[in-house]
Length: 407
Image 1 (cartoon, rainbow, N blue to C red):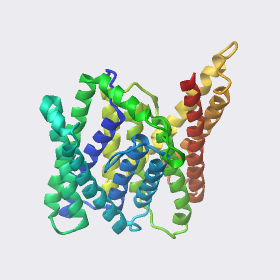
Image 2: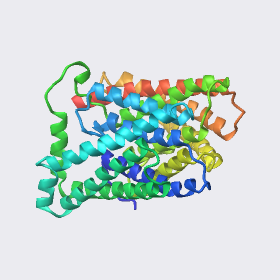
Image 3: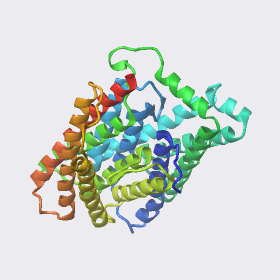
Image 4: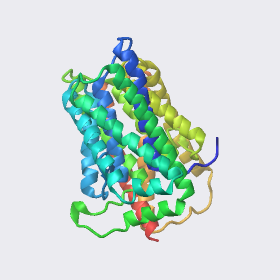
């Protein structure tokens, strides 16, 4: 369980989608009978955020793989803002997000299915080789065909019953899990080819302006996504506190936990510190994702529990990070190690920014644990500051990574 895992980001996203679709299907059985409430806005919004992260971090879209250019990243950010707004403000974008998700599922499924069987390098070659590649073909076909049906159901409500939709969603989730397992096995059997493809994708011809290749590290991409999330949430809380907009605390908590799950599974980065990516940590990340999905789909079911959980993680994590950062410095003696001239200022900026982030996280955690203790406008301001600090941290981290990779 503690063995180091080599899960790629693509596998992490597929596992996250497997949890999302499977739980959505199982919960829909209770929703259709009236036993459970349903928040369509947060459901559609959460799906769009997951898709947007895949676009920003990998250049993979529901319609196929593209050059991860600045234009594509901008499109991903717009999709993320749309999804987050739907999660935070119920009823504001219900019809639009439903149609958007339906078009993504239907159009993406058709596009990927055509690419799978039309390309000489995909299904035809994989089926001829056999083995795990034949299973990959089956998994891809399953994952590409089911969204065509689900997309049609979303675009034309009433063509299928809720029970039929629930069964399709569960099968869709199982397909994602199967596909992630196939990719993991292939990565272990053909590691050199995977690295070669990665080098080829990053070493293609140069483009100009917004079409230029964007070498955005995964850690920076996650920080940017979190920065957008918290800044947008903070800005929306100002009119929400004035009673001008409705608000979904369940959608907010579900989104936070889902992004936390991505950080945990992709980077081993948790609110309590950095850990080795093992099966144990993947299970923890999947548990975060499951809580986030349930919170988003079924409002009120886990609100109190998740609020306390998120509050404790922020308070304990923020405090532990401050102690780990400054206690060794007080005990250390002698001359501090030197660093390259281009790195040292960015490292100092990162330390100051991380200290501010930890302090702000503790304030946010306290507001979760004791609602009403911190005034609403102050919480909104804290979240905006937190989001802006994350952008600063992403910039500093990007500089450090760039300097180190060029040495």
